[in-house]
Image 1: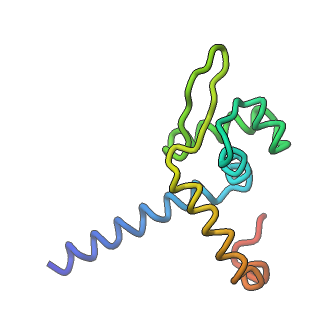
Image 2 (image 1 turned 120 degrees about the horizontal axis):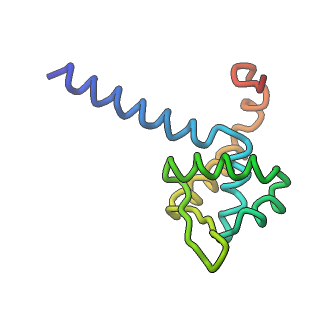
Length: 114
């Protein structure tokens, strides 16, 4: 019985880690931030994030595959949007948490970019 509980805990932890890896890239966070206000086409995301079009397209593909964004065709454009309002809430909660712990996060040497 204890093994089943441990396996479930482990599976939950792995799912959480996989979700947070989706949020772990600065480009993906910039794209999600741009989409929090309204659905956007690729060229609009490029303008708002100042990322290259290939970079945006690559990360959108990842975000779509992970279920964090969805897309809708509008004429000749595809508009991308946050797939669930809870994602926007989570990003807002992260910002609120950073208001409290930012000093420690900035001082942390464990997760520096390469």
